[in-house]
Image 1 (cartoon, helix red, strand yellow):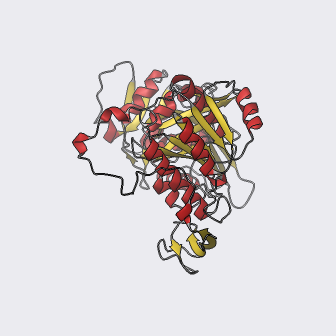
Image 2 (cartoon, rainbow, N blue to C red):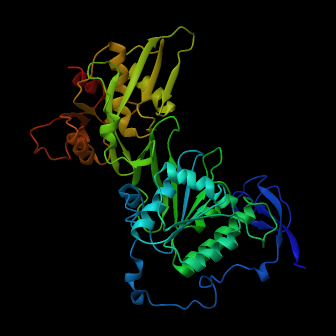
Length: 458
């Protein structure tokens, strides 16, 4: 009979303790230790995946490692390949997180079909859906590849045995919280199960050189469920974000050992699944009215990618003793600061006004470079003055009312020029840095928010 022992695991960092403690000795969090029963793993039936951290590994001089074995696998989705740094690295273990219903399984099923069609067999293991349910989802997405194999199982050891036999080009686990190994006497999704299953997947990836993508559930705070060390163990951590009531989805890399974490991929949800959005700015500005007050265009950076988006404001006399400030897609604290600066430095009366602002498209903007365009949109509706439809306003607003420089100004301007914008109000510091060779556009530099208001409505 297998030897059984009881240990306590920290839900936050995965630290192990022989007895319960109110405070985790590793991460310092309170009331995070949970009791679990762990069997002796000496007689594990996991297929041989030795090669990582065992006595079979031998040191090799760095120049002697052949780079030919590190050719990336393209997904044929440019947005995904951009985020991953050029494609999937063989032997990489990747984690994809996101809110329920945001499209994680849909995205990976579409990626699996592309890899199956262009590279080789893909094994999709689901612990949440039956094979019939996967077939129904695939039909809705028009996926019918003979090299895409699906298995409905939660026993990770069995899944790894199948993968060891098939040698797929890509392995997908949906999801890690539903997987279990019989060597751990704990419920699927528990700290010990998630940690052990991820550890075995990691060893399998490195031994067999098979890239694996695992889906992770998220908590109500937006963090991936399970021990924090889950994100430390994998090579790539991706988050799939977006508001379910809107069509746009954003894929961003939080961790990437093989590329940059500053790239993002943008998708739109359509009837047949997820589609790439190569030019999100054009889609976000497609229905913008040219003759309405309270509207302005801002350019914010999604990673290193400039995106033009319309911001709208509504200023109305309050019917209450305390005026309301409501922000959708914009940081409420920044809005309150902007209103204080407009009242103190520019003389606008806003203490008896309700102020509502909205970033169109369901996007969330929290970049200081968008302060000035937000302030102009508010004054535009307050004074019922229309901002020119071909004007873009950029700049960070300080508490003294000054306008400060922002990063990547030329990249933002070039993106706006592609969409026909010809007038720009930017910080004076950026104005001195850029070249003024293009006579088809008009760029004005400002040092204060009051000066920007004069130029915007002149």
